[in-house]
Length: 353
Image 1 (cartoon, one colour):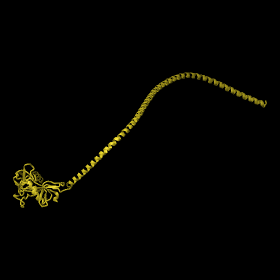
Image 2 (cartoon, rainbow, N blue to C red; image 1 turned 45 degrees about the vertical axis):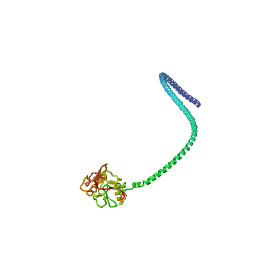
Image 3 (tube, rainbow, N blue to C red; image 1 turned 60 degrees about the vertical axis):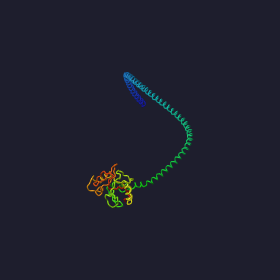
Image 4 (cartoon, rainbow, N blue to C red; image 1 turned 90 degrees about the vertical axis):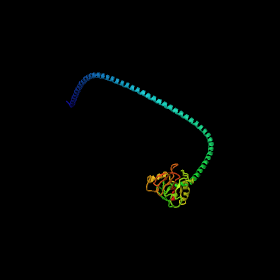
């Protein structure tokens, strides 16, 4: 055989092997396809069973889902209805508020218009009244100016008069004011004072620094007959008519003697004597208490002693006359009796410097 024929045979053999392989493969495929078909049938059958069950479940689920959806929808509808009612109420309230506000605004506008109108009318009336009042005020002011000028003149005149009177009063009372501003020496009861004529006196009443005068009692009796001796000839009656009268105008009384004859004689020696009198019974008791003296005593002092004898007091009670005795007590007496005289003077403190 030739090579060509060998080649053809080889080719044919190969083709046959390939065809056999293909046939085997196809058979295998057919078998597999049959198996798959059978499997598919089984699966389809099972799927049919399962599908029927699932369909039932699905139907039940759908029904449940639908019921839930219906419930939700009903709830939504209820809530929506509630919300709608609320919204309606809110809208209604808003609308009501808007209407009220509109009404108020309208009323305010109306009131403002009324005010403007009334103000315009009032201003016009005021202008008219003001013009009328101006005329009246001018008349009144002219009258008032005349009255005020008269009043001012009267006030000025009165002020000048008051100033003049004040100056006159000040000039007259200048000494009194000056005395009040001054400070004088203080004196106390029982204090011994020597006057410029070297006579000795005792303070019978406290006198502070703002008081101009001091009251003094003479140490000894008055030498009435001026013989330089103190004896019975220097005694005198209180009053010749046997009555209690201390009157400096009656020549028969001891008061006349003190305020005339004695005052003249002492003024010749001492300046600043303002008055002369007798010591009263109240003043005597006060002195005795302040000095700490007893009601009676054996040893004498400047108030009472044998050398002073009995001397007249100017009684503090009407229709009674008292005298101080030698032991310091005082007793009732009568005007017809005779006793020594111890004068009391009120003197300016400036004359004592």
